[in-house]
Image (cartoon, helix red, strand yellow):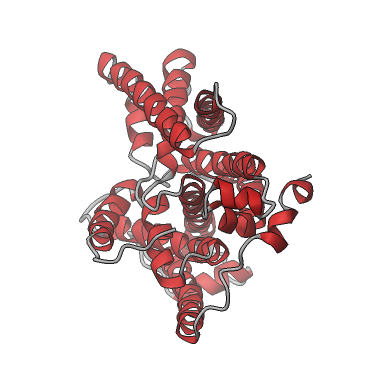
Length: 353
Protein backbone atom coordinates (compact mmCIF):
# COMPACT_ATOMS: atom_id res chain seq x y z
CA UNK A 1 0.00 0.00 0.00
CA UNK A 2 2.78 2.36 0.88
CA UNK A 3 4.53 1.67 -2.40
CA UNK A 4 1.68 3.36 -4.25
CA UNK A 5 1.81 6.47 -2.18
CA UNK A 6 5.50 7.14 -1.82
CA UNK A 7 7.33 5.75 -4.87
CA UNK A 8 7.16 8.89 -6.98
CA UNK A 9 9.51 10.63 -4.61
CA UNK A 10 12.08 7.87 -4.75
CA UNK A 11 13.09 8.90 -8.22
CA UNK A 12 11.65 12.37 -8.41
CA UNK A 13 12.65 13.73 -5.04
CA UNK A 14 15.81 15.75 -5.15
CA UNK A 15 18.72 13.67 -4.20
CA UNK A 16 20.75 15.81 -1.84
CA UNK A 17 23.28 15.42 -4.60
CA UNK A 18 26.78 14.15 -4.39
CA UNK A 19 27.92 15.43 -1.03
CA UNK A 20 31.48 16.69 -0.82
CA UNK A 21 34.09 14.16 0.13
CA UNK A 22 34.47 15.75 3.55
CA UNK A 23 30.78 15.14 4.29
CA UNK A 24 31.04 11.51 3.17
CA UNK A 25 34.03 11.07 5.46
CA UNK A 26 32.14 12.62 8.35
CA UNK A 27 29.20 10.31 7.72
CA UNK A 28 31.39 7.21 7.56
CA UNK A 29 33.25 8.21 10.72
CA UNK A 30 29.99 8.98 12.52
CA UNK A 31 28.47 5.67 11.43
CA UNK A 32 31.44 3.68 12.72
CA UNK A 33 31.52 5.70 15.93
CA UNK A 34 27.78 5.21 16.45
CA UNK A 35 28.01 1.44 16.07
CA UNK A 36 30.97 1.31 18.48
CA UNK A 37 29.25 3.52 21.06
CA UNK A 38 26.05 1.50 20.84
CA UNK A 39 27.94 -1.76 21.39
CA UNK A 40 29.76 -0.20 24.35
CA UNK A 41 26.57 1.07 25.96
CA UNK A 42 24.84 -2.29 25.49
CA UNK A 43 27.72 -3.96 27.29
CA UNK A 44 27.78 -1.37 30.10
CA UNK A 45 24.02 -1.66 30.53
CA UNK A 46 24.43 -5.37 31.21
CA UNK A 47 27.48 -4.95 33.44
CA UNK A 48 26.91 -1.84 35.57
CA UNK A 49 24.48 -1.41 38.45
CA UNK A 50 24.23 -1.70 42.20
CA UNK A 51 26.19 -4.93 41.71
CA UNK A 52 28.85 -4.74 38.97
CA UNK A 53 29.20 -7.87 36.89
CA UNK A 54 32.27 -8.72 34.77
CA UNK A 55 31.88 -8.87 31.01
CA UNK A 56 32.95 -12.53 30.98
CA UNK A 57 30.08 -13.40 33.33
CA UNK A 58 27.66 -11.44 31.15
CA UNK A 59 28.82 -13.35 28.09
CA UNK A 60 28.53 -16.72 29.81
CA UNK A 61 25.04 -15.81 31.05
CA UNK A 62 23.88 -14.84 27.55
CA UNK A 63 25.35 -18.00 26.05
CA UNK A 64 23.80 -20.22 28.74
CA UNK A 65 27.14 -21.37 30.14
CA UNK A 66 26.54 -19.75 33.54
CA UNK A 67 23.43 -20.17 35.70
CA UNK A 68 24.68 -18.57 38.92
CA UNK A 69 23.32 -15.58 40.83
CA UNK A 70 25.05 -12.98 38.65
CA UNK A 71 23.82 -14.71 35.51
CA UNK A 72 20.30 -14.57 36.91
CA UNK A 73 20.63 -10.82 37.47
CA UNK A 74 21.77 -10.36 33.89
CA UNK A 75 19.01 -12.44 32.32
CA UNK A 76 16.03 -11.49 34.47
CA UNK A 77 16.76 -7.84 35.31
CA UNK A 78 19.36 -6.21 33.10
CA UNK A 79 18.71 -7.86 29.75
CA UNK A 80 15.04 -6.79 29.49
CA UNK A 81 16.00 -3.35 30.77
CA UNK A 82 18.71 -3.06 28.11
CA UNK A 83 16.34 -4.17 25.36
CA UNK A 84 13.80 -1.65 26.64
CA UNK A 85 16.37 1.16 26.50
CA UNK A 86 17.36 0.14 22.98
CA UNK A 87 13.76 0.11 21.74
CA UNK A 88 12.64 3.29 23.50
CA UNK A 89 15.71 5.25 22.42
CA UNK A 90 15.39 4.13 18.80
CA UNK A 91 11.67 4.93 18.73
CA UNK A 92 12.06 8.41 20.22
CA UNK A 93 15.01 9.29 18.00
CA UNK A 94 13.26 8.30 14.77
CA UNK A 95 9.96 9.88 15.88
CA UNK A 96 11.82 13.14 16.57
CA UNK A 97 13.49 13.06 13.16
CA UNK A 98 10.14 12.43 11.47
CA UNK A 99 8.30 15.24 13.21
CA UNK A 100 11.11 17.70 12.55
CA UNK A 101 10.96 16.81 8.87
CA UNK A 102 7.16 16.91 8.63
CA UNK A 103 6.81 20.22 10.47
CA UNK A 104 10.01 21.64 8.95
CA UNK A 105 11.01 22.70 12.45
CA UNK A 106 14.49 21.54 13.58
CA UNK A 107 13.54 22.08 17.23
CA UNK A 108 10.31 20.07 17.26
CA UNK A 109 9.91 16.88 19.29
CA UNK A 110 7.24 14.14 19.64
CA UNK A 111 5.66 15.91 22.59
CA UNK A 112 4.61 18.76 20.31
CA UNK A 113 1.80 16.58 18.93
CA UNK A 114 0.44 15.98 22.41
CA UNK A 115 1.53 12.33 22.41
CA UNK A 116 3.00 12.36 25.91
CA UNK A 117 0.11 14.42 27.30
CA UNK A 118 -2.42 12.01 25.81
CA UNK A 119 -0.58 9.03 27.28
CA UNK A 120 -0.36 10.62 30.72
CA UNK A 121 -4.05 11.49 30.68
CA UNK A 122 -5.03 7.94 29.70
CA UNK A 123 -2.81 6.45 32.40
CA UNK A 124 -4.33 8.79 34.96
CA UNK A 125 -7.82 7.61 33.97
CA UNK A 126 -6.73 3.96 34.10
CA UNK A 127 -5.27 4.40 37.58
CA UNK A 128 -7.98 6.63 39.01
CA UNK A 129 -11.08 5.00 37.49
CA UNK A 130 -10.06 1.36 37.01
CA UNK A 131 -7.52 1.11 39.82
CA UNK A 132 -4.71 -0.26 37.62
CA UNK A 133 -1.27 0.03 39.21
CA UNK A 134 0.99 -2.36 37.26
CA UNK A 135 2.94 -1.24 34.17
CA UNK A 136 1.86 -4.22 32.07
CA UNK A 137 -1.81 -3.38 32.73
CA UNK A 138 -1.86 0.36 32.05
CA UNK A 139 0.63 0.26 29.16
CA UNK A 140 -2.24 -0.27 26.73
CA UNK A 141 -4.07 2.78 28.06
CA UNK A 142 -0.93 4.87 27.54
CA UNK A 143 -0.64 3.64 23.98
CA UNK A 144 -4.33 4.18 23.27
CA UNK A 145 -4.15 7.69 24.72
CA UNK A 146 -1.24 8.56 22.45
CA UNK A 147 -3.00 7.25 19.36
CA UNK A 148 -6.31 8.98 20.17
CA UNK A 149 -4.58 12.30 20.81
CA UNK A 150 -2.62 12.16 17.56
CA UNK A 151 -5.77 11.42 15.54
CA UNK A 152 -7.58 14.30 17.25
CA UNK A 153 -4.66 16.65 16.55
CA UNK A 154 -4.63 15.68 12.88
CA UNK A 155 -8.40 16.10 12.47
CA UNK A 156 -8.40 19.49 14.18
CA UNK A 157 -5.27 20.69 12.39
CA UNK A 158 -6.63 19.74 8.96
CA UNK A 159 -10.24 20.86 9.46
CA UNK A 160 -11.55 23.42 6.98
CA UNK A 161 -8.39 23.48 4.86
CA UNK A 162 -7.65 22.18 1.42
CA UNK A 163 -4.35 20.71 2.54
CA UNK A 164 -2.77 19.61 5.80
CA UNK A 165 -0.73 22.47 7.23
CA UNK A 166 2.27 21.67 9.46
CA UNK A 167 1.68 24.91 11.37
CA UNK A 168 -1.96 24.05 12.03
CA UNK A 169 -1.08 20.54 13.20
CA UNK A 170 1.61 21.94 15.49
CA UNK A 171 -0.76 24.50 17.02
CA UNK A 172 -3.45 21.86 17.48
CA UNK A 173 -0.95 19.54 19.16
CA UNK A 174 0.28 22.22 21.54
CA UNK A 175 -3.29 23.26 22.44
CA UNK A 176 -4.60 19.74 23.03
CA UNK A 177 -1.46 18.76 24.92
CA UNK A 178 -1.82 21.79 27.21
CA UNK A 179 -5.46 20.96 27.95
CA UNK A 180 -4.74 17.30 28.72
CA UNK A 181 -1.71 18.19 30.84
CA UNK A 182 -3.83 20.62 32.84
CA UNK A 183 -6.52 18.01 33.48
CA UNK A 184 -3.94 15.40 34.46
CA UNK A 185 -2.25 17.83 36.87
CA UNK A 186 -5.62 18.62 38.45
CA UNK A 187 -6.29 14.92 38.99
CA UNK A 188 -2.87 14.42 40.57
CA UNK A 189 -3.34 17.36 42.93
CA UNK A 190 -6.87 16.28 43.89
CA UNK A 191 -5.76 12.82 45.07
CA UNK A 192 -1.97 12.49 45.32
CA UNK A 193 -2.08 9.10 47.05
CA UNK A 194 -4.25 7.42 44.41
CA UNK A 195 -2.24 8.87 41.55
CA UNK A 196 1.22 8.20 43.00
CA UNK A 197 1.70 5.55 40.30
CA UNK A 198 1.12 8.19 37.62
CA UNK A 199 3.72 10.48 39.21
CA UNK A 200 6.31 7.70 39.13
CA UNK A 201 5.39 6.86 35.52
CA UNK A 202 5.64 10.51 34.44
CA UNK A 203 9.26 10.66 35.62
CA UNK A 204 10.24 8.17 32.90
CA UNK A 205 11.72 4.93 34.18
CA UNK A 206 12.76 1.45 33.06
CA UNK A 207 12.26 -0.04 36.52
CA UNK A 208 9.65 -2.79 36.93
CA UNK A 209 9.29 -3.22 33.16
CA UNK A 210 9.80 -6.76 31.94
CA UNK A 211 9.40 -8.90 28.86
CA UNK A 212 5.61 -8.69 29.04
CA UNK A 213 5.67 -4.96 28.30
CA UNK A 214 8.33 -5.39 25.61
CA UNK A 215 6.45 -8.17 23.83
CA UNK A 216 3.21 -6.20 23.90
CA UNK A 217 4.52 -2.95 22.39
CA UNK A 218 7.61 -3.86 20.32
CA UNK A 219 5.62 -5.00 17.22
CA UNK A 220 4.12 -1.51 16.95
CA UNK A 221 7.58 0.04 17.26
CA UNK A 222 8.96 -2.18 14.52
CA UNK A 223 6.12 -1.20 12.17
CA UNK A 224 6.79 2.46 12.91
CA UNK A 225 10.52 2.07 12.22
CA UNK A 226 9.86 0.38 8.86
CA UNK A 227 7.40 3.11 7.82
CA UNK A 228 9.86 5.83 8.82
CA UNK A 229 12.74 4.32 6.83
CA UNK A 230 10.51 3.91 3.76
CA UNK A 231 9.57 7.60 3.97
CA UNK A 232 13.16 8.83 3.95
CA UNK A 233 13.40 9.81 0.26
CA UNK A 234 9.95 11.44 0.28
CA UNK A 235 10.83 13.56 3.30
CA UNK A 236 13.69 15.12 1.33
CA UNK A 237 11.12 16.48 -1.11
CA UNK A 238 8.67 17.57 1.59
CA UNK A 239 11.45 19.52 3.29
CA UNK A 240 11.67 21.75 0.20
CA UNK A 241 8.09 22.96 0.64
CA UNK A 242 4.69 21.72 -0.49
CA UNK A 243 4.64 23.45 -3.89
CA UNK A 244 8.01 22.15 -5.02
CA UNK A 245 7.29 18.69 -3.59
CA UNK A 246 4.02 18.53 -5.59
CA UNK A 247 5.92 19.62 -8.69
CA UNK A 248 8.38 16.78 -8.17
CA UNK A 249 5.51 14.29 -7.97
CA UNK A 250 5.56 13.65 -4.22
CA UNK A 251 2.12 12.95 -2.66
CA UNK A 252 2.64 15.39 0.21
CA UNK A 253 -0.59 14.73 2.10
CA UNK A 254 -0.10 10.98 1.93
CA UNK A 255 3.47 11.27 3.11
CA UNK A 256 2.39 13.39 6.07
CA UNK A 257 -0.38 10.97 7.01
CA UNK A 258 1.98 7.98 6.91
CA UNK A 259 4.55 9.99 8.88
CA UNK A 260 1.95 10.81 11.53
CA UNK A 261 1.04 7.12 11.77
CA UNK A 262 4.71 6.24 12.25
CA UNK A 263 5.17 9.02 14.84
CA UNK A 264 2.13 7.77 16.75
CA UNK A 265 3.38 4.18 16.78
CA UNK A 266 6.92 5.16 17.77
CA UNK A 267 6.36 7.96 20.27
CA UNK A 268 3.18 6.42 21.65
CA UNK A 269 4.79 3.02 22.07
CA UNK A 270 7.93 4.44 23.69
CA UNK A 271 5.89 6.58 26.08
CA UNK A 272 3.68 3.62 26.96
CA UNK A 273 6.72 1.49 27.77
CA UNK A 274 8.79 3.94 29.80
CA UNK A 275 6.72 7.07 30.42
CA UNK A 276 7.41 10.56 29.04
CA UNK A 277 11.14 10.98 28.35
CA UNK A 278 12.27 14.43 27.23
CA UNK A 279 15.04 15.72 24.97
CA UNK A 280 15.92 12.45 23.18
CA UNK A 281 13.55 13.01 20.26
CA UNK A 282 14.44 16.70 20.22
CA UNK A 283 18.21 16.72 20.63
CA UNK A 284 19.43 13.66 18.73
CA UNK A 285 17.92 14.46 15.27
CA UNK A 286 18.99 18.09 15.62
CA UNK A 287 22.54 17.08 16.55
CA UNK A 288 22.98 14.45 13.84
CA UNK A 289 21.66 16.87 11.19
CA UNK A 290 24.67 19.04 11.88
CA UNK A 291 26.92 16.04 11.25
CA UNK A 292 25.31 14.37 8.22
CA UNK A 293 23.61 17.28 6.42
CA UNK A 294 19.97 17.73 5.40
CA UNK A 295 19.45 14.29 3.82
CA UNK A 296 16.58 12.76 5.80
CA UNK A 297 17.70 9.21 5.04
CA UNK A 298 20.98 9.78 6.86
CA UNK A 299 19.27 11.69 9.67
CA UNK A 300 16.94 8.75 10.29
CA UNK A 301 19.82 6.27 10.20
CA UNK A 302 21.99 8.25 12.61
CA UNK A 303 19.04 8.92 14.92
CA UNK A 304 18.42 5.18 14.99
CA UNK A 305 22.01 4.70 16.20
CA UNK A 306 22.65 7.59 18.56
CA UNK A 307 19.28 7.92 20.31
CA UNK A 308 19.59 4.51 22.03
CA UNK A 309 23.20 5.41 22.92
CA UNK A 310 21.94 8.44 24.84
CA UNK A 311 19.09 6.45 26.37
CA UNK A 312 21.30 3.59 27.58
CA UNK A 313 23.98 5.99 28.84
CA UNK A 314 21.35 7.88 30.83
CA UNK A 315 20.01 4.65 32.31
CA UNK A 316 23.47 3.45 33.32
CA UNK A 317 24.32 6.83 34.84
CA UNK A 318 21.03 6.86 36.73
CA UNK A 319 21.90 3.53 38.38
CA UNK A 320 25.19 4.74 39.86
CA UNK A 321 24.81 8.49 40.41
CA UNK A 322 23.04 8.13 43.78
CA UNK A 323 24.66 6.45 46.79
CA UNK A 324 21.49 4.41 47.28
CA UNK A 325 18.67 3.72 44.86
CA UNK A 326 18.62 5.08 41.34
CA UNK A 327 17.61 8.15 39.38
CA UNK A 328 14.88 7.78 36.76
CA UNK A 329 16.15 7.78 33.19
CA UNK A 330 13.79 10.60 32.21
CA UNK A 331 15.44 12.91 34.76
CA UNK A 332 18.94 11.99 33.58
CA UNK A 333 18.14 12.63 29.90
CA UNK A 334 16.89 16.09 30.86
CA UNK A 335 20.12 16.85 32.75
CA UNK A 336 22.26 15.58 29.87
CA UNK A 337 20.14 16.91 27.02
CA UNK A 338 19.42 20.46 28.13
CA UNK A 339 23.04 21.76 28.18
CA UNK A 340 23.92 20.04 24.91
CA UNK A 341 20.82 21.40 23.22
CA UNK A 342 21.59 24.92 24.45
CA UNK A 343 25.08 24.67 22.96
CA UNK A 344 23.68 23.45 19.65
CA UNK A 345 21.07 26.20 19.46
CA UNK A 346 23.60 28.91 20.34
CA UNK A 347 25.86 27.94 17.46
CA UNK A 348 26.12 30.74 14.94
CA UNK A 349 25.15 28.40 12.14
CA UNK A 350 22.20 26.32 13.29
CA UNK A 351 21.60 23.23 11.19
CA UNK A 352 18.60 23.63 8.91
CA UNK A 353 16.23 21.15 7.37
